[in-house]
Structure formats: structure tokens, C-alpha cells
Length: 201
Ligand SMILES: CC(C)(COP(=O)(O)OP(=O)(O)OC[C@H]1O[C@@H](n2cnc3c(N)ncnc32)[C@H](O)[C@@H]1OP(=O)(O)O)[C@@H](O)C(=O)NCCC(=O)NCCS
Image 1 (spheres, rainbow, N blue to C red):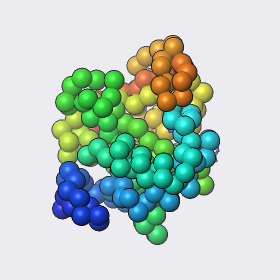
Image 2 (tube, protein in one colour):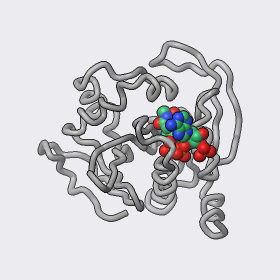
Image 3 (tube, rainbow, N blue to C red):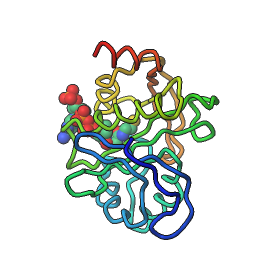
Image 4 (spheres, rainbow, N blue to C red):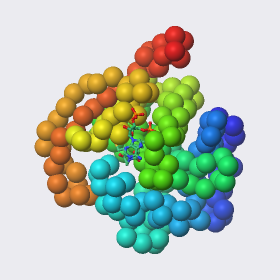
């Protein structure tokens, strides 16, 4: 973690305090209204949202609305490339009250997506590893849950590479934004497992 936001966004609105996180190639910081165009560039791709459970964005205004009303949680971050500062994806810890995977304050659900031009470079595993550190070290989490729908092998691989452990599979999971049911797989990273990975590699 490199700094904290002051609590005032570029537009002058008061927002919850949020960390800014850094990795070798990435900065993760609050989504801003001015990122809407960059978000739309990637979120309009039908290969990005639907597999994660949400429809492709139809307009820059829709992306702006998602930034304002959906990605406004304290632990929702824009993933930005250090080299140009542009937002290329999202990573979020969904806290108690915003996830159906737990009803505990010391557990949360990890969610993420990345613009297609950036796939296959290990960017999401890099972001996830820092977000896990943040969850356990800064936010006091004991467990981080993470799921994917049947067939999303790219997301399955990210979770495997980061050390998540398989828990269970549920058939007929409601995917409300897509008006359909799917098979969902659930993985878990405990604080103990995370500490072990980071001690022994
Ligand atoms: C899942 C996702 C975040 C992976 O991010 P990433 O930074 O590309 O992750 P990685 O580079 O580690 O690649 C993960 C796997 O994706 C596959 N992959 C990589 N590049 C690919 C490409 N261009 N096309 C198809 N598959 C690709 C590979 O199987 C890779 O696994 P490997 O390292 O064992 O070969 C990204 O594909 C994405 O945003 N997908 C759509 C949204 C989504 O699924 N979100 C998660 C919902 S649970």
C-alpha cells in the first residue's frame, strides 16, 4: 500500500477513504468518473462481462453509471498500467452485505475482470496477489472467497495460480443480470494458507 486517498474525489464529492495499491506493473486506485471512456473500451466486449455474469456495456454513459453506482465500494479498484496510468480492468473485495458468499465482517469475496488486449500477461494474478495481501494484512480478513462459472477456465487458472483451494460446486446458480442459471464453482484462500504460500513460496 503506498498512500491513502484524502476522501475527496476529483469531482469534489466526499468519498470513503480508500487505499492505493501498487505492484511491479500496476497501480490500483479508486475508479473516477473520467475513466468512463477507458472502461467502456473494454467493458463493451461481449467476451469480458457475460462470462463473469454481467452484460456488455452499451454506452460510455452506462460505464459512467457503473463507476458511480456499482464500483463505488470502499474496496473496488481500477487496475491501471503504471506506464500510462490508464484503467484496464477492475478488482474488488466485496465486503459483508455486498456478497452472498459470507455474512461475516472478516470474510469477503474477490471479483475481477480485465480488458481483452491485456489477457495472457499474468496481469490479473499480479493484481490478485497484492489484493490478497491487502485483504489479510490491511483489512483484517480471515478468508477471501472467489468463484467462477463453469467454462470460465481463464478465471479458474487465475485462482489456481494464486493458490485458492476448491470448496464446492453448485448447479442452477441464479445469474440475475444475465437472466439465466449456471453452474458455479467456489474457491477459498484462508489467512493461514496465504501466510504459508508467502513463507514457503
Ligand atoms: C480471467 C481474466 C481476469 C484473466 O486475466 P489474465 O491477466 O489474462 O490472467 P493470466 O494471464 O494469468 O491468464 C489466465 C489464463 O487465461 C488463458 N488465456 C490467457 N490469454 C488468453 C487469451 N488471449 N485468450 C484466451 N485465453 C487466454 C490461459 O489459459 C491462462 O492460463 P495459463 O497461464 O495457465 O496459460 C481475464 O481473462 C478476464 O477478464 N476474463 C473475463 C472476465 C472474467 O472472467 N472475470 C472473472 C469472473 S469469475
